[in-house]
Image 1 (cartoon, one colour):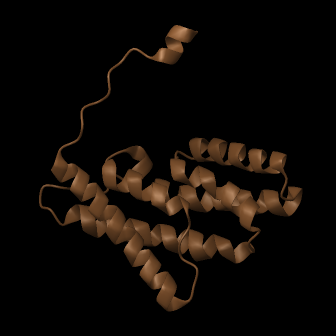
Image 2 (tube, one colour):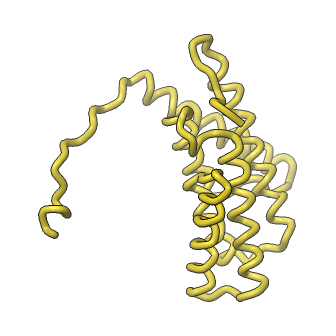
Length: 165
C-alpha cells in the first residue's frame, strides 16, 4: 500500500510559456466579462465553480470536460440536483453528500461530466438560494463562459473550438 501512495512517475513537463499565458488570459477575460456584467446588470451571474471551469476551458479546451454541452448541462444539472435535494432533504451534511453523488452519477449517465459543476450542489446547500439560482447565475453564467470560449479559442486560425456540441 505504501508503495502505491508514493507513486512511481515523475512530474509531467512544464507547458510552454505561450500556453501558460494563453490559459491565464482566458481565465482573466472570462471572469472579467462575467464579473463586469454581474456588477453592472445587478444580476447574479457568477459562481465560485466558474473559476474551476476556466481552468478546464483555458488549459484543456479539447477535453470532453470542456465541451459546451458539458459546461452548460453539467452546471445546470448539478445545480438542479442541489436545489431538489435542498428542497426535499434540507441542508444537512448527508444531503449535501447525496446531492454531490447524484450529480456525479447523472452527469456520467448523460455524458455531460464537467468536474467544476460537482461543486454546485455544495454551493447550493451552503447558500440556500431559491429556484431562480438555476437561471441566474447558473445557466446564464455557463452560457457566458462558453461564449467567451467560442470567441477566444476560435480567434487564432490554427485553433478550433468546440470539438462537438
